[in-house]
Image (cartoon, rainbow, N blue to C red; front, side, top):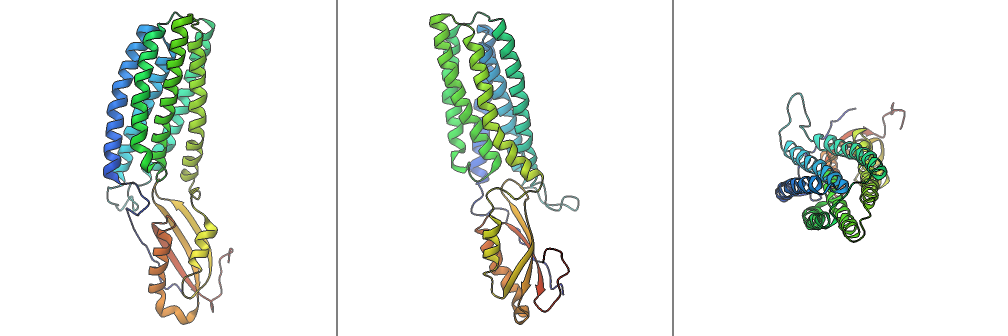
Length: 306
């Protein structure tokens, strides 16, 4: 008996970040970091500082990442179509994965240039280098603060926060190296700092890549506990068993679930109420879209995971 499917769509649940706040945060972050990239490039070329130029390149990738993330969030508000029945929610997952890949490419470029420069150090104006990086600390720290409230609610927001926070730390390192170079003329310090920047970026990006790849492969989002979800479903009135359960991400904020529910036959007339109750239970476990297939205990299950 296939008494019916239940589909619940909740585009904004309690745990999702507010788009209006994010819109402001992303636009402010893009504007501030774009201006700083220009400052770093000019200063880097003027002072021959590789660490400033590599940090400018990293900041430029952050600007592109912020712009793509903002676009992805805008696309989540676009209505579903006959060709894209879930709308464009998944664009947020694609963007987070793409951002991680871009950062890995940037790390490779920075590492190569740092090694080349280490073997052939160039004279650097440490004073200007330190002052420019000092400005970067303020800009990156402020941008990170814009995302701190929602960093645990969405993978793209977490990525933006991590990038900005890492950049603030990197800028601090460049300040220190600029001061050392100013007083000692040890120009190879610039290459060492560039390599440290590359390592910091690599470490900060690794988890982002793993999380986004998991969602790309329709894996269970890491914040989801399947045992807890099954236990919650079994609390439903008349629910005797749960099987054939799948959970995946529709976007970096919305998760979906399908499950077969074994229902006591005497509750067949109450199935709509059971679905309504279970939907609300799942919303508190970060499941915003649910589909239930009822089976009754007097039926023979033909699915291999029964």
